[in-house]
Image 1 (cartoon, rainbow, N blue to C red):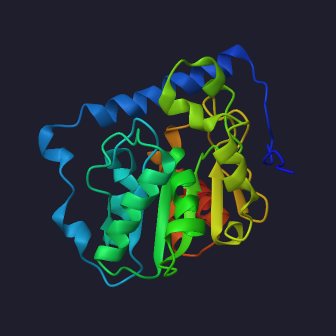
Image 2 (image 1 turned 180 degrees about the vertical axis):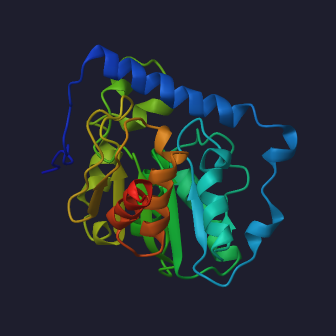
Length: 252
């Protein structure tokens, strides 16, 4: 019998002020992404180079790679080749189709030892690759950020076909949740409160990490959260990155 995916913290209730503040800070980040000049909408050529583990960026629904640009720049500066999926645009295609398109990028460039950095829906795409399309085991690990592994209640009330795949009762989502073997290669990072993914992002068998801030998008640009994401990509302890930042801030 198909079982419902783990809901992690699940349906967390917060006060109206905290909810509103979370939404405001989230969309302040989104607007900054959309308002970048045209010159900033081209994938930097320098991202193609590096001698460390390749990184595949997978944004969420209605997002582009630019939502992950701050993280991509940090990882590129550390020597990781950073790749995106051409034609992905705003990631509105079904998850299986997007997984196949992303897999073609890895196969075409013969990338191995890949670390996927995914936000929201991107985490579902990344896991679909790990359990389905990645037959040559090119993906080593995935760092997922605020991904709706257990779905989100908003998919039931928003009349948008692109969001229905996130229903907690969606058959494909339930089937993906049953694929447990890949979870041990996933770091699932989630905000203290996420107004978009209220069911939480906890994944059984994965390394589950909580950010020190609220928000669905905010961690993508918050310095402490970016430090944690980079540490996870590097195979280091994400909490140590926050501890180091706190120690630096308290130093005389």
